[in-house]
Length: 203
Image: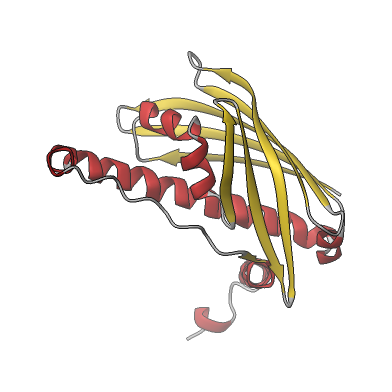
């Protein structure tokens, strides 16, 4: 099953800070829902896990992520990922990101992602997979924004941290992605769009 996603988002952070996060496997993995970094092979390749839960079923994907194209001057990159779970299901993805400086403090990011999914995850259904993928990407972008905000705030206190010898705090390993919860959110959002005059909109 193939899924295509295109999103444009503005991030409240300088382009240099956003690019540095995009080029950091540790930071990138910490922002992906349900993901954890297991090994950095080199500056262009790393391994990680992604845990998904569908009701009582838990799927643990293990895979490799590679920066296949990096253009520092243009602030653009292409990342490919290949992962497989113990039941034989696979997920392959290609994610392209291009950054543009909207202002000194705002970065505009164009993100394109294509996924190819096989195995038990396909049982969720094609229509829902699209919505779930969009929600996961949206949560990833939210996490990136939060991480950048935290970095900016931490930068104001870097002098004190350096003097005390304290190391910056890191995100802990994230739990699995609850696919059923995400599906419910997708359904609820679609119902709101279809029924704008229902529920809370009525007086």
